[in-house]
Length: 289
Image 1 (cartoon, rainbow, N blue to C red):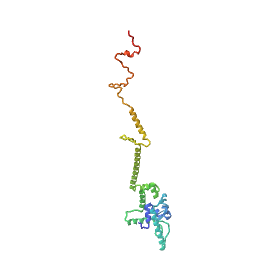
Image 2 (cartoon, one colour):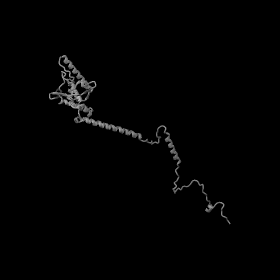
Image 3 (cartoon, one colour):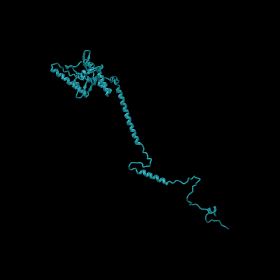
Image 4 (spheres, rainbow, N blue to C red):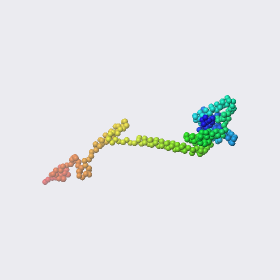
């Protein structure tokens, strides 16, 4: 189809999802190739054998369509081919009508919408493809955009639907791979957040973990300026332990009664003295007759 005179017609329909009537009613004044955007302003369709041209199908059909760089190149090539047709018609003395439509016949008049449908069907048969309607290219464009990451609101604006319900009912179930991709992306997001949270918890626990004392009795390393404090505390503990002397016997030990080492204050009793001699004051000895 690349050598077909309406190759830009098939390309634009398959990638941007325009309706057949919107493609046939498109004019060059509605296309800005420098900005990469075209505007849908009219709809050209048929009613029996009569061609009817008017406003888009719905008020939402009047919209702006963004164009990628490759589509802009295709439209520029189509424009050059159209100008060559105009020049060749003038050289050969053939009639040419400058209608300013993007897709025209060899004489410059706009194509019939039914002609586009018939020509596309013949091209599909010639290529040996399964039966594909021209309108299926519009559905394919929406499905590809949905798979590329476009949400329903973007699809609604692209297709010109009057309600997002139409978009949701038509295109949410066409691509199960999109739902699978969404599920994988959601799971990846949750698992990545869990890994970050777990790492933060581990780092916080490592910072708050107390320093363990070495088993060999080696001094605990500390920050500069605080090394003297553990040493002073250790020396004080050793001093207190030295000042404490273990008792030789317990007061309640009946086998080894506690006796004072010093005999100060005790009076020795000789064999010739009695208890009365000890308690009688000196100078009051008894008179003998």
